[in-house]
Length: 448
Image (cartoon, rainbow, N blue to C red):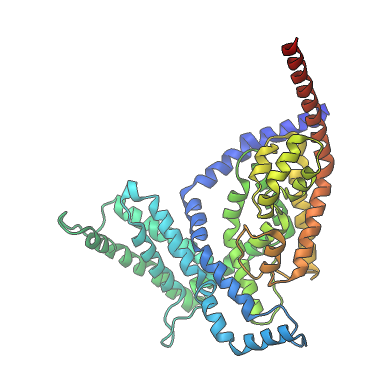
């Protein structure tokens, strides 16, 4: 036991001294925060758009004879264009929303120091992104690069435009107007020079790439990032993300928020590719997306603590039993702060191994199920608070095999947690017995 305790202390000191400070600095870095907040701001559009995609492509075989399924398929085929229009205006052009939202959130960091207007930052970034991602062709604006393909470009353009505006402000480069001029007019004139800089820098670059490589900037950037996107969709990358996120959580830092913020660009790129493949009737290429993390890996919240809550419900310890009853409903909606801090799990050496092991085992099993086509793959953005079985089925286009897998994974997590739960339960039972004996002795003394 002493050897295990020494090993735990060694791991914890490493996380506390090396991993946590780096993660803390990354999570508080203004560009990372702007990217994270930008994705969050754009999420409502993507959730609604993804929801409508399921209506356009019902989860039934084309040759089904079931009346309800047949009617749904026929209606979806007849009104496919009308059903997909809201999808095209949300998920289909999600990079537009992401670009503007990132620029706005980054601009807010410079309001006090450089007097930037976040709204103007968003407007400039939106113009710059459309300039390089959707140049007018034969009287129309192409939208091929406005979806998942344009995410990396949207991020880079948003950061470039805001940082360029900050640089110009810092060096007093711009059109100066008298103080008597209304603020809105001053803000408009402040944007003239940044617009000119964008046109003189990004547009020539776009023209060169089009002439030399016959592709737009988003397509060129995607070709550069393609190996990284593919690597991020592999099982080793998934397990590494799970490990880092849960090590941080165990040290008291919200690791899931940090990891998901960094992976969001890859998740949405993968989601866009899956939706494009679905519309084209092709096999879905990607596995690792936010819904995969939320509904298959961390069932009930970080650490896959749904299994632990199940164990708590029948515990002989009054403390754990009360935590289980308090946590069961929130855990069903993937909220596990009651069990995380009520147990507590953070910095509790008894739960160190299962807290890391349960989500990693879930990741392997779910990845294998999708790889071998035992269940489908993610095609929708789903609110993370959706109950896991329902959210999993919804994310996969109402593939109810996913709901069954979630139940299995929750049971697997419970099995992993069980022996460690019994060790902790024994410790608490001894403490509760000592407390009861001490209270009895105090009562006897008062009676005497």
